[in-house]
Image (cartoon, rainbow, N blue to C red; front, side, top):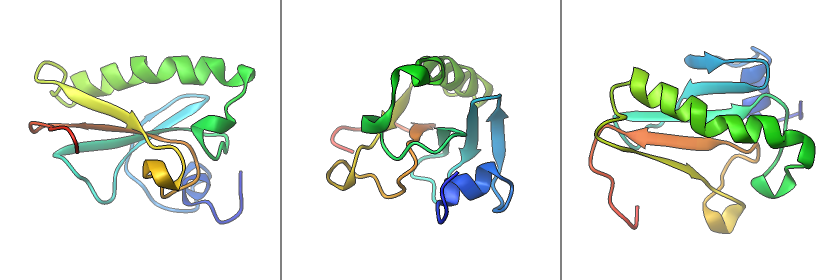
Length: 114
């Protein structure tokens, strides 16, 4: 856990969130400011600032992310129409909260660039 990290506070139960998935390593929540009809955030429970900070011992949770995303997309009814799974890295990449997290977006046509 990291002091001042909103995602660490959510993981610890100190801040509210709508949890949609949880296991021993991962937590998924609804985004408080959704950019699509379905906008979920998937994150490790352990504080990792950016994707650049992952280590070899993070391989299990990193590898589980696509499987959890697929499950949540099916549960939310967006798997067949399609969804986007994206991670922003550092400020130049659009990262605003420095606890690595993946955005799962869907429920409307997603164009590129976003």
